[in-house]
Image (cartoon, rainbow, N blue to C red; front, side, top):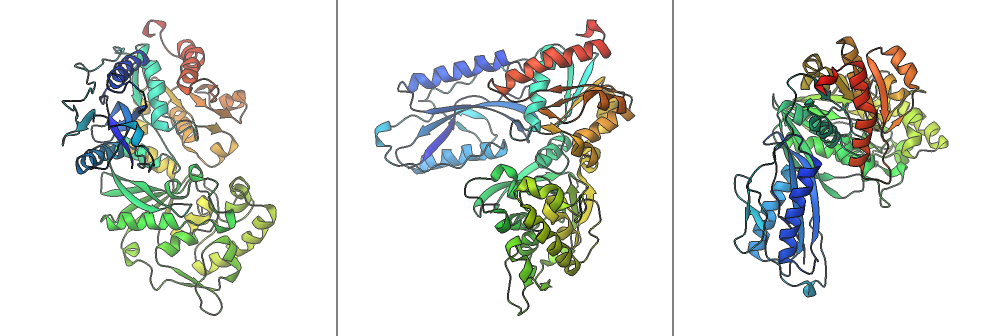
Length: 512
């Protein structure tokens, strides 16, 4: 018995269409569903995403129907939808369920043809609008560049650019949307969206020891891009997550090997957002490096076993690593050791106690000497020391923010813009100190003599201090998540704070 997911709406490849249009489409789609499902036992969901094939925003309505039997025909349609959900990064595992006989058979409302178009079943009630919604006409003059990082735990960068873009477009402003990242969560999507790339999907071991589907971005130049956060990130933490001394970055090494299996020899690894402090030994283990005790017996590469490690054996290191160009994108320019290092700065937020930090700091220094390399290199402390570990097998550490912003062409986009919006979930001293993406964008629009603002969930800086240091920064808008829908919070913040900032400091009122 399984849950069947079937689409009953249409993908709308429309730039920033209004909430009113979306509500109308969703209302019509639900009406069609309930016409064939009077009991209302289906589960329904409206989704927004970014289609990496057409390179356009999409809006899709999904219905989850309960299937009585897993017939071959149902399985084929399930596979068809699964491809679409994967392509739109909306993949969800098909849940197993029991004792569903009473729910009765329901018609398949739609399917997907080889070109990716949603077609109605002739016996179903799929709603497919005859016309594509048209966004509000944009001004020929004033242009806004929307380039935020993600609001971690609340809203991804792509979704935030769409929400802010909708508000700007509804007021006639020209909009260019460019989600950014710095090596942490959202790195793959930002690079794929900004370069016209595409996605591959692979299965690897996650932080919790379970198999999980993960994205590999493919960008021009045959470069594969992966994220540490996808395998061992904060978003994966559950009650089943091992305690910090047993967490391993093994899944990151698996993810690198999967990219190698796909044939790529240029691999960018986003290091940010990890929940591990294992010095990257787990990742090295997945790549074939063996850690041994004084008797030559293999040691599990996790913090709980640090003291047993007496030797490093690279005999079985995947030879493809030395034949590849491994670029390590750090989100924080932290060294491996010391007060600004991997453990003392980031260990507490990952759950490490003061005693553990003191003990593991000593072990980090000892094992790092076995691996070889410079622990003072900026970024070597990223992802709990993963940066240092992968550099020890030939990886090159680089600033994620600088590398990503250059690759997606942010400098040109800023020059073309009249106003820039950037931001992230929490902007504080670490954002500036370690060169996080919004800080890098702010530096660049200041250098280009373009005004802009920060759009954040939380601000750990005095706005006046920020504006004194960055004269082109017109202010910081705080938009925390609360009881009301986040879309409504963004709408109010844009109307109440961003628009007056634009109108007062930059724009000709006639443009608004």
